[in-house]
Image 1: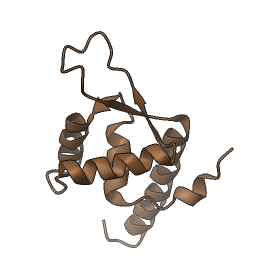
Image 2 (image 1 turned 60 degrees about the horizontal axis):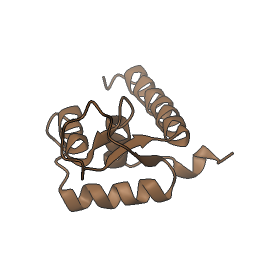
Image 3 (image 1 turned 30 degrees about the horizontal axis):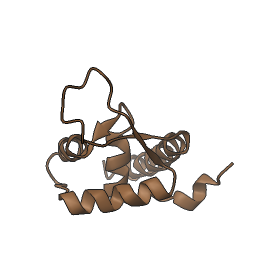
Image 4 (image 1 turned 180 degrees about the vertical axis):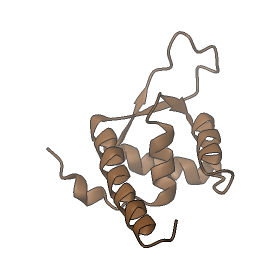
Length: 111
């Protein structure tokens, strides 16, 4: 089993990409839209930036490429991505880490 700690902490842009893939498989443009929405417009990924991150996430086995489902009438050339089990574990562990930080911020009166 892979040690999840080697992936932590997760850079904020990468975390947003992983979160975009946490619910369902998405193609690149869908990931870009989700990241923009989750960040309230603060993060606008360019295509090359996104695919550079996806390439790395694929190499690290956090994301895998999947076939588009038959329900998807979009361009069959689109590539779809989803989290692997390891990717889900990294998102869960990073979410817990961030939750502890937010809890401490509240305790200190910053929130």
